[in-house]
Length: 545
Image (cartoon, rainbow, N blue to C red):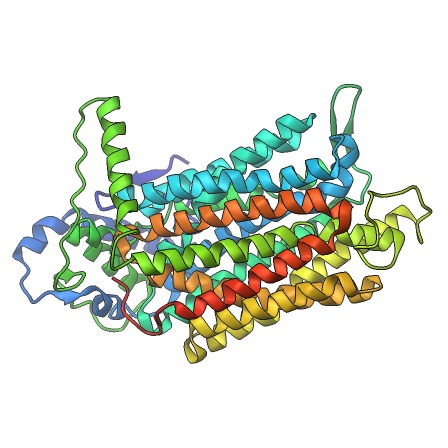
Protein backbone atom coordinates (compact mmCIF):
# COMPACT_ATOMS: atom_id res chain seq x y z
CA UNK A 1 0.00 0.00 0.00
CA UNK A 2 1.35 3.45 -0.87
CA UNK A 3 1.75 5.62 2.23
CA UNK A 4 -0.36 8.79 2.44
CA UNK A 5 1.85 11.64 3.66
CA UNK A 6 0.94 15.15 4.72
CA UNK A 7 3.89 17.42 5.44
CA UNK A 8 2.97 20.23 7.83
CA UNK A 9 4.46 23.72 7.98
CA UNK A 10 5.00 23.94 11.72
CA UNK A 11 8.02 21.84 12.57
CA UNK A 12 6.03 18.60 12.81
CA UNK A 13 7.24 15.35 11.40
CA UNK A 14 5.67 13.98 8.22
CA UNK A 15 2.55 12.01 9.07
CA UNK A 16 2.59 8.86 6.94
CA UNK A 17 -0.14 6.26 7.13
CA UNK A 18 0.88 2.77 6.09
CA UNK A 19 0.91 -0.66 7.74
CA UNK A 20 4.60 -0.24 8.60
CA UNK A 21 5.01 3.47 9.38
CA UNK A 22 1.86 4.22 11.37
CA UNK A 23 3.43 3.21 14.66
CA UNK A 24 2.57 6.31 16.68
CA UNK A 25 -0.87 4.97 17.58
CA UNK A 26 -2.05 1.70 16.08
CA UNK A 27 -5.76 2.16 15.74
CA UNK A 28 -8.79 1.97 13.49
CA UNK A 29 -9.62 3.98 10.37
CA UNK A 30 -11.34 6.45 12.65
CA UNK A 31 -8.00 7.30 14.30
CA UNK A 32 -6.39 7.87 10.89
CA UNK A 33 -9.20 10.24 9.95
CA UNK A 34 -8.69 12.10 13.22
CA UNK A 35 -4.98 12.51 12.49
CA UNK A 36 -5.65 13.85 8.98
CA UNK A 37 -8.30 16.21 10.30
CA UNK A 38 -5.86 17.53 12.87
CA UNK A 39 -3.23 18.12 10.20
CA UNK A 40 -5.76 20.17 8.20
CA UNK A 41 -6.37 22.16 11.40
CA UNK A 42 -2.64 22.94 11.61
CA UNK A 43 -2.46 23.96 7.93
CA UNK A 44 -5.09 26.62 8.58
CA UNK A 45 -3.61 27.72 11.91
CA UNK A 46 -2.13 31.02 10.71
CA UNK A 47 -5.43 32.24 9.27
CA UNK A 48 -7.43 31.26 12.33
CA UNK A 49 -4.95 32.83 14.76
CA UNK A 50 -5.46 36.20 13.07
CA UNK A 51 -9.11 36.06 14.05
CA UNK A 52 -8.49 34.82 17.61
CA UNK A 53 -8.24 37.28 20.44
CA UNK A 54 -7.14 36.90 24.01
CA UNK A 55 -4.40 37.77 26.44
CA UNK A 56 -0.95 36.27 26.13
CA UNK A 57 -0.23 33.19 28.24
CA UNK A 58 3.19 32.44 29.69
CA UNK A 59 4.74 29.28 28.26
CA UNK A 60 4.91 27.48 31.61
CA UNK A 61 1.19 28.12 32.19
CA UNK A 62 0.30 27.08 28.65
CA UNK A 63 2.32 23.87 29.01
CA UNK A 64 0.59 23.04 32.28
CA UNK A 65 -2.82 23.39 30.61
CA UNK A 66 -1.96 20.62 28.14
CA UNK A 67 -2.20 18.19 31.05
CA UNK A 68 0.20 15.37 31.74
CA UNK A 69 -0.53 12.10 30.04
CA UNK A 70 0.20 9.72 27.22
CA UNK A 71 2.19 12.19 25.09
CA UNK A 72 4.63 12.92 27.93
CA UNK A 73 5.10 9.23 28.67
CA UNK A 74 5.73 8.61 24.97
CA UNK A 75 8.38 11.36 24.94
CA UNK A 76 9.98 9.77 28.02
CA UNK A 77 10.12 6.37 26.33
CA UNK A 78 11.49 7.64 23.01
CA UNK A 79 14.07 9.98 24.56
CA UNK A 80 14.95 7.26 27.06
CA UNK A 81 15.53 4.74 24.26
CA UNK A 82 17.85 7.27 22.61
CA UNK A 83 19.75 7.78 25.89
CA UNK A 84 20.05 3.99 26.21
CA UNK A 85 21.42 3.78 22.67
CA UNK A 86 24.15 6.27 23.56
CA UNK A 87 25.07 4.33 26.70
CA UNK A 88 25.24 1.09 24.72
CA UNK A 89 27.48 2.61 22.07
CA UNK A 90 29.83 4.21 24.62
CA UNK A 91 30.13 1.17 26.90
CA UNK A 92 30.17 -1.56 24.24
CA UNK A 93 33.90 -1.15 23.60
CA UNK A 94 34.81 -1.89 27.22
CA UNK A 95 33.01 -5.24 27.01
CA UNK A 96 34.67 -6.38 23.78
CA UNK A 97 38.23 -5.40 24.77
CA UNK A 98 39.29 -8.77 26.28
CA UNK A 99 38.01 -10.72 23.25
CA UNK A 100 39.17 -8.27 20.57
CA UNK A 101 42.69 -7.98 21.95
CA UNK A 102 44.06 -10.81 19.80
CA UNK A 103 42.13 -10.00 16.61
CA UNK A 104 43.22 -6.34 16.65
CA UNK A 105 46.65 -6.99 18.20
CA UNK A 106 46.15 -4.47 21.02
CA UNK A 107 48.41 -3.55 23.93
CA UNK A 108 47.10 -1.95 27.13
CA UNK A 109 47.97 1.46 25.68
CA UNK A 110 45.98 0.63 22.51
CA UNK A 111 43.03 -0.34 24.71
CA UNK A 112 43.26 2.99 26.47
CA UNK A 113 43.17 4.86 23.16
CA UNK A 114 40.29 2.73 21.91
CA UNK A 115 38.30 3.56 25.04
CA UNK A 116 39.27 7.21 24.63
CA UNK A 117 38.64 7.73 20.89
CA UNK A 118 34.85 7.69 21.19
CA UNK A 119 35.17 10.56 23.68
CA UNK A 120 37.28 12.51 21.18
CA UNK A 121 34.37 12.19 18.75
CA UNK A 122 31.87 13.07 21.47
CA UNK A 123 33.87 16.19 22.37
CA UNK A 124 33.69 17.44 18.77
CA UNK A 125 30.13 16.25 18.20
CA UNK A 126 28.82 17.74 21.44
CA UNK A 127 29.71 21.30 20.48
CA UNK A 128 28.89 20.93 16.78
CA UNK A 129 25.48 19.29 17.15
CA UNK A 130 24.57 21.23 20.31
CA UNK A 131 25.16 24.58 18.61
CA UNK A 132 23.18 23.49 15.56
CA UNK A 133 20.29 22.45 17.81
CA UNK A 134 20.05 25.98 19.26
CA UNK A 135 19.86 27.40 15.74
CA UNK A 136 18.00 24.82 13.66
CA UNK A 137 15.96 22.89 16.21
CA UNK A 138 16.29 19.84 18.44
CA UNK A 139 14.47 17.23 16.36
CA UNK A 140 16.46 17.72 13.14
CA UNK A 141 19.76 17.45 14.98
CA UNK A 142 18.66 14.30 16.80
CA UNK A 143 17.85 12.62 13.50
CA UNK A 144 21.33 13.36 12.16
CA UNK A 145 23.36 12.54 15.27
CA UNK A 146 21.60 9.24 16.01
CA UNK A 147 22.07 8.12 12.40
CA UNK A 148 25.80 8.96 12.44
CA UNK A 149 26.12 7.06 15.72
CA UNK A 150 24.52 3.90 14.34
CA UNK A 151 26.31 3.89 10.98
CA UNK A 152 29.70 4.45 12.62
CA UNK A 153 29.08 1.47 14.89
CA UNK A 154 28.09 -0.76 11.97
CA UNK A 155 31.25 0.12 10.04
CA UNK A 156 33.40 -0.59 13.09
CA UNK A 157 31.98 -4.11 13.39
CA UNK A 158 33.42 -5.01 9.97
CA UNK A 159 36.86 -3.42 10.51
CA UNK A 160 39.69 -5.95 10.37
CA UNK A 161 42.58 -3.73 11.47
CA UNK A 162 43.03 -1.60 14.58
CA UNK A 163 43.38 1.82 12.91
CA UNK A 164 40.19 1.38 10.87
CA UNK A 165 38.27 0.21 13.93
CA UNK A 166 39.60 3.26 15.79
CA UNK A 167 38.44 5.61 13.00
CA UNK A 168 34.94 4.09 12.90
CA UNK A 169 34.57 4.43 16.67
CA UNK A 170 35.60 8.08 16.36
CA UNK A 171 32.80 8.68 13.81
CA UNK A 172 30.34 6.90 16.08
CA UNK A 173 31.47 9.17 18.92
CA UNK A 174 30.65 12.27 16.88
CA UNK A 175 27.06 11.02 16.68
CA UNK A 176 26.85 10.12 20.37
CA UNK A 177 28.27 13.51 21.34
CA UNK A 178 25.41 15.28 19.59
CA UNK A 179 22.49 13.22 20.76
CA UNK A 180 23.19 13.26 24.51
CA UNK A 181 22.96 17.06 25.13
CA UNK A 182 20.16 17.60 22.61
CA UNK A 183 18.00 14.77 23.96
CA UNK A 184 17.97 16.31 27.43
CA UNK A 185 17.21 19.78 26.04
CA UNK A 186 14.37 18.40 23.91
CA UNK A 187 12.88 16.40 26.78
CA UNK A 188 13.17 19.19 29.36
CA UNK A 189 11.27 21.66 27.19
CA UNK A 190 8.16 19.45 27.32
CA UNK A 191 8.17 19.19 31.14
CA UNK A 192 6.18 21.46 33.54
CA UNK A 193 8.26 22.79 36.41
CA UNK A 194 6.44 20.80 39.12
CA UNK A 195 7.45 17.51 37.45
CA UNK A 196 10.71 18.53 35.78
CA UNK A 197 13.20 17.30 38.40
CA UNK A 198 11.64 13.86 38.74
CA UNK A 199 11.13 13.37 35.01
CA UNK A 200 14.67 14.38 34.04
CA UNK A 201 15.89 11.96 36.71
CA UNK A 202 13.64 9.29 35.19
CA UNK A 203 15.12 10.02 31.75
CA UNK A 204 18.64 9.71 33.17
CA UNK A 205 17.84 6.20 34.45
CA UNK A 206 17.73 4.99 30.85
CA UNK A 207 21.53 5.26 30.80
CA UNK A 208 21.46 2.43 33.34
CA UNK A 209 19.13 0.42 31.08
CA UNK A 210 21.57 0.93 28.22
CA UNK A 211 24.39 -0.26 30.45
CA UNK A 212 22.38 -3.35 31.42
CA UNK A 213 21.50 -4.06 27.78
CA UNK A 214 25.16 -3.76 26.74
CA UNK A 215 26.29 -6.03 29.58
CA UNK A 216 23.51 -8.54 28.88
CA UNK A 217 24.28 -8.63 25.15
CA UNK A 218 27.98 -9.04 25.85
CA UNK A 219 27.31 -11.90 28.26
CA UNK A 220 24.95 -13.59 25.77
CA UNK A 221 26.98 -13.15 22.58
CA UNK A 222 30.72 -12.62 23.08
CA UNK A 223 31.60 -15.90 24.91
CA UNK A 224 29.89 -17.95 22.15
CA UNK A 225 31.71 -19.50 19.21
CA UNK A 226 29.61 -17.94 16.45
CA UNK A 227 30.22 -15.88 13.33
CA UNK A 228 31.95 -16.17 9.96
CA UNK A 229 35.63 -16.89 9.35
CA UNK A 230 37.72 -16.89 6.17
CA UNK A 231 41.36 -16.36 5.30
CA UNK A 232 40.93 -12.60 4.86
CA UNK A 233 37.79 -11.73 6.81
CA UNK A 234 36.56 -12.48 10.32
CA UNK A 235 33.15 -11.68 11.70
CA UNK A 236 33.20 -13.39 15.07
CA UNK A 237 31.10 -13.04 18.20
CA UNK A 238 32.47 -9.74 19.48
CA UNK A 239 31.89 -8.13 16.06
CA UNK A 240 28.30 -9.40 16.08
CA UNK A 241 27.93 -7.84 19.52
CA UNK A 242 29.19 -4.46 18.21
CA UNK A 243 26.71 -4.63 15.30
CA UNK A 244 23.79 -5.48 17.60
CA UNK A 245 24.66 -2.46 19.74
CA UNK A 246 23.81 -0.13 16.82
CA UNK A 247 20.15 -1.19 16.64
CA UNK A 248 18.92 1.17 19.42
CA UNK A 249 20.46 4.30 17.85
CA UNK A 250 19.15 3.55 14.35
CA UNK A 251 15.64 2.75 15.60
CA UNK A 252 15.68 5.92 17.72
CA UNK A 253 16.43 7.97 14.60
CA UNK A 254 13.41 6.42 12.88
CA UNK A 255 11.16 7.15 15.86
CA UNK A 256 12.09 10.84 15.95
CA UNK A 257 10.91 11.25 12.35
CA UNK A 258 7.40 11.11 13.78
CA UNK A 259 7.87 13.54 16.69
CA UNK A 260 7.16 17.31 16.82
CA UNK A 261 9.75 20.02 17.34
CA UNK A 262 10.15 21.44 20.84
CA UNK A 263 7.45 24.12 21.32
CA UNK A 264 9.73 26.10 23.60
CA UNK A 265 12.40 26.27 20.89
CA UNK A 266 9.78 27.43 18.38
CA UNK A 267 8.65 30.11 20.82
CA UNK A 268 12.24 31.22 21.43
CA UNK A 269 12.83 31.91 17.73
CA UNK A 270 9.56 33.83 17.40
CA UNK A 271 7.37 31.12 15.82
CA UNK A 272 4.61 31.53 18.39
CA UNK A 273 1.80 30.14 16.25
CA UNK A 274 3.74 27.00 15.47
CA UNK A 275 4.53 26.56 19.16
CA UNK A 276 0.84 26.95 19.98
CA UNK A 277 -0.04 24.31 17.40
CA UNK A 278 2.36 21.85 19.04
CA UNK A 279 0.85 22.55 22.48
CA UNK A 280 -2.63 21.93 21.07
CA UNK A 281 -1.34 18.68 19.62
CA UNK A 282 0.00 17.65 23.05
CA UNK A 283 -3.33 18.58 24.69
CA UNK A 284 -5.17 16.43 22.15
CA UNK A 285 -2.88 13.42 22.65
CA UNK A 286 -3.21 13.69 26.42
CA UNK A 287 -6.99 13.41 25.94
CA UNK A 288 -7.85 16.22 28.36
CA UNK A 289 -11.60 16.54 29.10
CA UNK A 290 -11.74 20.31 28.53
CA UNK A 291 -10.80 22.24 25.40
CA UNK A 292 -7.45 24.01 25.13
CA UNK A 293 -8.19 27.67 25.84
CA UNK A 294 -4.76 29.22 25.21
CA UNK A 295 -4.84 31.48 22.14
CA UNK A 296 -1.59 33.44 22.40
CA UNK A 297 1.83 32.55 23.83
CA UNK A 298 4.78 34.41 25.29
CA UNK A 299 7.97 32.90 26.74
CA UNK A 300 8.24 35.56 29.45
CA UNK A 301 7.26 39.25 29.59
CA UNK A 302 10.77 40.48 28.73
CA UNK A 303 11.63 37.90 26.08
CA UNK A 304 12.78 39.08 22.68
CA UNK A 305 12.61 36.29 20.10
CA UNK A 306 15.67 35.35 18.07
CA UNK A 307 14.66 35.53 14.42
CA UNK A 308 16.65 33.16 12.26
CA UNK A 309 17.30 34.17 8.68
CA UNK A 310 17.81 31.69 5.88
CA UNK A 311 18.76 33.78 2.88
CA UNK A 312 20.03 31.77 -0.05
CA UNK A 313 23.32 33.64 -0.52
CA UNK A 314 25.59 30.77 -1.42
CA UNK A 315 27.45 28.04 0.42
CA UNK A 316 30.34 30.18 1.71
CA UNK A 317 28.03 32.89 3.06
CA UNK A 318 25.81 30.27 4.68
CA UNK A 319 28.77 28.62 6.43
CA UNK A 320 30.12 32.01 7.55
CA UNK A 321 26.71 33.04 8.91
CA UNK A 322 26.35 29.78 10.83
CA UNK A 323 29.84 30.03 12.32
CA UNK A 324 29.19 33.60 13.49
CA UNK A 325 25.91 32.48 15.03
CA UNK A 326 27.58 29.58 16.84
CA UNK A 327 30.30 31.89 18.17
CA UNK A 328 27.71 34.39 19.37
CA UNK A 329 25.68 31.73 21.17
CA UNK A 330 28.80 30.28 22.78
CA UNK A 331 29.97 33.73 23.89
CA UNK A 332 26.81 34.27 25.93
CA UNK A 333 27.81 31.41 28.21
CA UNK A 334 31.02 33.14 29.26
CA UNK A 335 29.56 36.54 30.06
CA UNK A 336 27.53 37.55 33.12
CA UNK A 337 25.05 36.39 34.31
CA UNK A 338 25.92 32.88 33.00
CA UNK A 339 29.71 33.01 33.49
CA UNK A 340 29.78 31.75 37.09
CA UNK A 341 27.48 28.79 36.46
CA UNK A 342 29.31 27.90 33.24
CA UNK A 343 32.74 27.74 34.89
CA UNK A 344 31.54 25.72 37.89
CA UNK A 345 29.67 23.27 35.65
CA UNK A 346 32.77 22.79 33.48
CA UNK A 347 34.86 21.95 36.55
CA UNK A 348 32.25 19.45 37.76
CA UNK A 349 31.92 17.83 34.32
CA UNK A 350 35.69 17.47 34.04
CA UNK A 351 36.23 15.90 37.46
CA UNK A 352 33.21 13.58 37.30
CA UNK A 353 33.92 12.41 33.74
CA UNK A 354 37.62 11.83 34.44
CA UNK A 355 36.77 9.82 37.53
CA UNK A 356 33.79 7.87 36.23
CA UNK A 357 34.83 7.01 32.68
CA UNK A 358 38.50 6.67 33.56
CA UNK A 359 37.54 3.84 35.89
CA UNK A 360 34.23 2.47 34.56
CA UNK A 361 35.53 1.69 31.07
CA UNK A 362 38.29 -0.42 32.64
CA UNK A 363 36.09 -2.48 34.95
CA UNK A 364 35.80 -5.48 32.55
CA UNK A 365 39.61 -5.54 32.18
CA UNK A 366 40.08 -5.38 35.96
CA UNK A 367 37.47 -8.13 36.46
CA UNK A 368 39.35 -10.24 33.90
CA UNK A 369 42.66 -9.88 35.75
CA UNK A 370 41.15 -10.64 39.15
CA UNK A 371 39.41 -13.75 37.77
CA UNK A 372 42.55 -15.05 36.08
CA UNK A 373 45.13 -14.37 38.75
CA UNK A 374 43.22 -13.74 41.98
CA UNK A 375 43.99 -11.13 44.63
CA UNK A 376 43.72 -7.38 44.11
CA UNK A 377 43.41 -5.96 40.58
CA UNK A 378 46.48 -3.86 41.41
CA UNK A 379 48.69 -6.88 42.20
CA UNK A 380 49.49 -7.50 38.52
CA UNK A 381 51.74 -4.69 37.40
CA UNK A 382 53.42 -5.91 34.25
CA UNK A 383 50.71 -7.19 31.97
CA UNK A 384 49.16 -10.67 32.04
CA UNK A 385 51.70 -13.39 32.69
CA UNK A 386 51.26 -16.95 31.45
CA UNK A 387 49.48 -18.64 34.30
CA UNK A 388 46.95 -21.39 34.63
CA UNK A 389 43.55 -19.95 35.31
CA UNK A 390 41.36 -21.13 38.15
CA UNK A 391 38.70 -22.36 35.73
CA UNK A 392 38.03 -22.91 32.08
CA UNK A 393 38.10 -20.06 29.60
CA UNK A 394 34.33 -20.15 29.19
CA UNK A 395 33.82 -19.87 32.95
CA UNK A 396 36.31 -16.99 33.12
CA UNK A 397 34.43 -15.12 30.43
CA UNK A 398 31.08 -15.79 32.04
CA UNK A 399 32.37 -14.32 35.30
CA UNK A 400 33.70 -11.22 33.52
CA UNK A 401 30.37 -10.50 31.82
CA UNK A 402 28.33 -11.50 34.88
CA UNK A 403 30.37 -8.98 36.88
CA UNK A 404 29.76 -6.29 34.26
CA UNK A 405 26.04 -7.06 34.22
CA UNK A 406 25.77 -6.92 38.01
CA UNK A 407 27.76 -3.67 38.14
CA UNK A 408 25.38 -2.14 35.58
CA UNK A 409 22.38 -3.35 37.59
CA UNK A 410 23.82 -1.75 40.73
CA UNK A 411 22.85 1.66 39.31
CA UNK A 412 19.17 0.90 39.96
CA UNK A 413 19.07 1.96 43.66
CA UNK A 414 20.77 5.26 42.86
CA UNK A 415 18.36 5.97 40.03
CA UNK A 416 15.30 5.25 42.16
CA UNK A 417 16.72 7.40 44.95
CA UNK A 418 17.19 10.42 42.68
CA UNK A 419 13.68 10.20 41.24
CA UNK A 420 12.27 10.34 44.77
CA UNK A 421 14.70 12.84 46.35
CA UNK A 422 15.60 15.20 43.49
CA UNK A 423 12.96 17.78 44.45
CA UNK A 424 13.07 17.02 48.19
CA UNK A 425 16.80 17.36 48.90
CA UNK A 426 17.74 19.41 45.86
CA UNK A 427 20.20 18.94 43.02
CA UNK A 428 23.26 20.46 44.73
CA UNK A 429 23.17 18.27 47.84
CA UNK A 430 22.73 15.08 45.82
CA UNK A 431 25.52 16.00 43.40
CA UNK A 432 28.01 17.01 46.08
CA UNK A 433 27.41 14.06 48.41
CA UNK A 434 27.46 11.58 45.51
CA UNK A 435 30.82 12.76 44.15
CA UNK A 436 32.48 12.74 47.57
CA UNK A 437 31.12 9.25 48.34
CA UNK A 438 32.24 8.00 44.90
CA UNK A 439 35.75 9.24 45.60
CA UNK A 440 35.81 7.31 48.86
CA UNK A 441 34.67 4.11 47.06
CA UNK A 442 37.45 4.39 44.47
CA UNK A 443 40.06 4.80 47.21
CA UNK A 444 39.22 1.32 48.55
CA UNK A 445 39.40 -0.58 45.22
CA UNK A 446 43.20 -1.23 45.41
CA UNK A 447 42.71 -2.63 48.93
CA UNK A 448 40.35 -5.49 47.96
CA UNK A 449 41.77 -9.03 48.09
CA UNK A 450 39.42 -11.19 46.01
CA UNK A 451 36.95 -10.99 43.13
CA UNK A 452 33.87 -10.74 45.35
CA UNK A 453 35.25 -7.77 47.27
CA UNK A 454 36.23 -6.17 43.97
CA UNK A 455 32.72 -6.70 42.62
CA UNK A 456 31.14 -5.30 45.79
CA UNK A 457 33.16 -2.07 45.77
CA UNK A 458 32.55 -1.66 42.02
CA UNK A 459 28.79 -2.04 42.50
CA UNK A 460 28.84 0.46 45.35
CA UNK A 461 30.74 2.92 43.13
CA UNK A 462 28.15 2.46 40.36
CA UNK A 463 25.20 2.99 42.71
CA UNK A 464 26.63 6.12 44.34
CA UNK A 465 28.01 7.79 41.19
CA UNK A 466 24.66 7.42 39.40
CA UNK A 467 23.10 9.86 41.88
CA UNK A 468 25.65 12.50 40.90
CA UNK A 469 25.18 12.00 37.16
CA UNK A 470 21.40 12.34 37.45
CA UNK A 471 21.66 15.51 39.53
CA UNK A 472 24.16 16.92 37.02
CA UNK A 473 21.78 16.16 34.13
CA UNK A 474 19.00 18.11 35.84
CA UNK A 475 21.23 21.08 36.65
CA UNK A 476 22.65 21.18 33.12
CA UNK A 477 19.20 21.77 31.64
CA UNK A 478 17.87 24.14 34.32
CA UNK A 479 20.77 26.56 34.77
CA UNK A 480 20.79 27.88 31.18
CA UNK A 481 18.10 29.54 29.00
CA UNK A 482 16.51 27.90 25.96
CA UNK A 483 18.48 29.81 23.33
CA UNK A 484 21.83 28.49 24.65
CA UNK A 485 20.77 25.29 26.44
CA UNK A 486 21.93 22.74 23.87
CA UNK A 487 25.15 24.67 23.19
CA UNK A 488 25.85 24.79 26.91
CA UNK A 489 25.28 21.07 27.32
CA UNK A 490 27.41 20.43 24.24
CA UNK A 491 30.33 22.42 25.69
CA UNK A 492 29.93 20.83 29.12
CA UNK A 493 29.86 17.32 27.70
CA UNK A 494 32.75 18.24 25.39
CA UNK A 495 34.90 19.16 28.40
CA UNK A 496 33.69 15.95 30.03
CA UNK A 497 34.89 14.01 26.97
CA UNK A 498 38.32 15.62 27.21
CA UNK A 499 38.43 14.46 30.82
CA UNK A 500 37.30 10.96 29.80
CA UNK A 501 40.06 10.85 27.18
CA UNK A 502 42.68 11.78 29.77
CA UNK A 503 41.20 9.31 32.23
CA UNK A 504 41.31 6.37 29.82
CA UNK A 505 44.74 7.16 28.38
CA UNK A 506 46.29 7.71 31.83
CA UNK A 507 44.69 4.51 33.09
CA UNK A 508 46.06 2.62 30.07
CA UNK A 509 49.55 4.02 30.66
CA UNK A 510 49.58 3.27 34.40
CA UNK A 511 47.47 0.14 34.83
CA UNK A 512 50.49 -2.10 34.13
CA UNK A 513 52.78 0.04 36.31
CA UNK A 514 50.55 0.14 39.38
CA UNK A 515 46.81 0.77 39.14
CA UNK A 516 46.65 2.34 42.61
CA UNK A 517 48.18 5.52 41.10
CA UNK A 518 45.24 6.32 38.76
CA UNK A 519 42.83 5.15 41.48
CA UNK A 520 44.14 7.76 43.92
CA UNK A 521 44.00 10.43 41.20
CA UNK A 522 40.38 9.53 40.38
CA UNK A 523 39.44 9.58 44.06
CA UNK A 524 40.93 13.03 44.62
CA UNK A 525 39.28 14.60 41.56
CA UNK A 526 35.85 13.25 42.50
CA UNK A 527 36.08 14.71 46.00
CA UNK A 528 37.27 18.07 44.62
CA UNK A 529 34.39 18.23 42.12
CA UNK A 530 31.88 17.39 44.83
CA UNK A 531 33.07 20.24 47.03
CA UNK A 532 33.02 22.66 44.07
CA UNK A 533 29.37 21.86 43.29
CA UNK A 534 28.29 23.52 46.55
CA UNK A 535 28.80 26.89 44.82
CA UNK A 536 26.00 26.31 42.31
CA UNK A 537 22.61 28.09 42.66
CA UNK A 538 19.46 26.17 43.54
CA UNK A 539 17.02 25.42 40.69
CA UNK A 540 14.33 23.43 42.52
CA UNK A 541 10.87 24.20 41.05
CA UNK A 542 12.05 27.35 39.28
CA UNK A 543 10.92 28.40 35.80
CA UNK A 544 13.34 27.65 32.98
CA UNK A 545 13.84 30.58 30.61
